[in-house]
Image (spheres, rainbow, N blue to C red):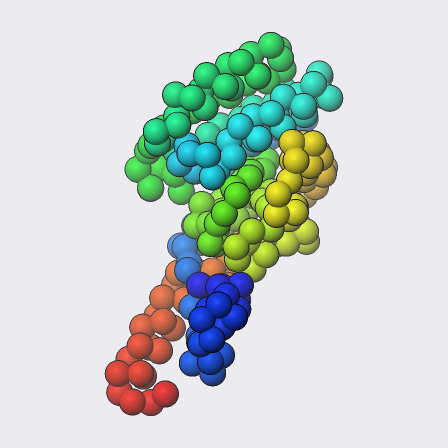
Length: 229
């Protein structure tokens, strides 16, 4: 799915690079794009299962740091995704964020994929945040970027193939709470730029477009089956 995964297969298992082929995932590119929020607010969305590898506790701690820095800025966080750790995440958010009058949060749990894809378009969204310890190339970020939402994410797995500082913020592979808060601050300053949002969308259109990638993958398989390597 990514150059990073190809390198791993080559280095860990000795698979000859000549028989490796990168076949990225893809998502549909919607006709409509997301709208950023207004002055005095920042609207942040995350999508993941609620489990330790997703490091939601770090996101929550970073939001607390960020809200504390910007007492006059309304900080709105919305998380989509359920899982065994959902109640724990809700409790931790209450503990860390309820004392900030300028911070709001909501957990939407598990919702249909069509609703996930529509969420950033139907709701004002400034940026998308991911703090995972391990990833491939997250479809959730592709879907947000396809809607024109700039991403903040760690440099793990194949993330660097998707996220760039040109239209988002690519952090280190193990960002601290302060690093994430700094990333929110950096991305907030450019997240409402039409050019930045256009570039995020174009990355998906050019590299992770389902209408292009999946037919190409099928054609490759067909060629192999026909002996046309």
